[in-house]
Image 1 (spheres, one colour):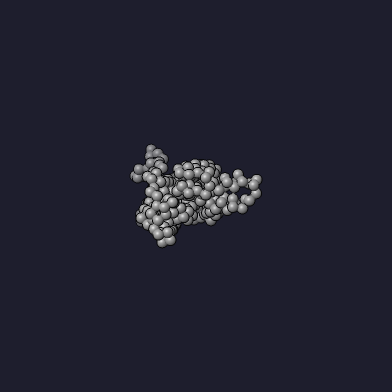
Image 2 (cartoon, rainbow, N blue to C red; image 1 turned 90 degrees about the vertical axis):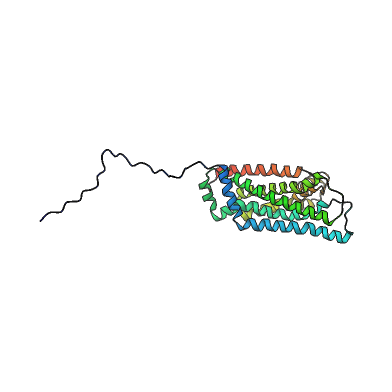
Length: 283
């Protein structure tokens, strides 16, 4: 009887050396700002909040401005000889600003509420790059939608009502100026959302920023508060939007391109603060 051969343990050849590390056949390159922008564009166009907020904003602007023009045309016989017709867009823009504020906060606040921010920062560890990509995508989208809608509203109002002819500068302010102001207001909301990291809290703060200065100023009856009252009215957001159309509540508030530039400066300061806090905080 033949004894079966004993299996021998696998022995590594002494001259084979340690196993080499795995190398992916897929080319690997460092992530760039363009990659982050592409990622944020995919996110913002695939969530329902974008459709709802921008859809409601467009509906409000297209309804309120031309609707006001129709009512005035029926009441005044078709003309408004002493007032700029484009200024009627103010009411729709003021209501639409709440939608832009909501979308600006949700652009980053929804990621904190769902935990998606951990995945985002794992894919792109640079927090400043993530916030910059969100700001670029949100500002471009809100500016384009608001400017096109404002142009349609201004055109409809001019067709409905007769009034003083608006100059080219007035048309640019009533379209691109309004779009720039609302985009900057949305960026301010994005910065507040990044700082607060809670959607409901950030939206409440931003609504207070819109309404509180004007409401507080209305109850400052004492003469010692006169300067503070004028400051709050001049720089309240409703008065700044009116300044773009040339119809402010006071004669000392910002007008023309001053409101968009002021809002851009404020949004840039808040976003810089948000980047500093993001770099110091844990996710």
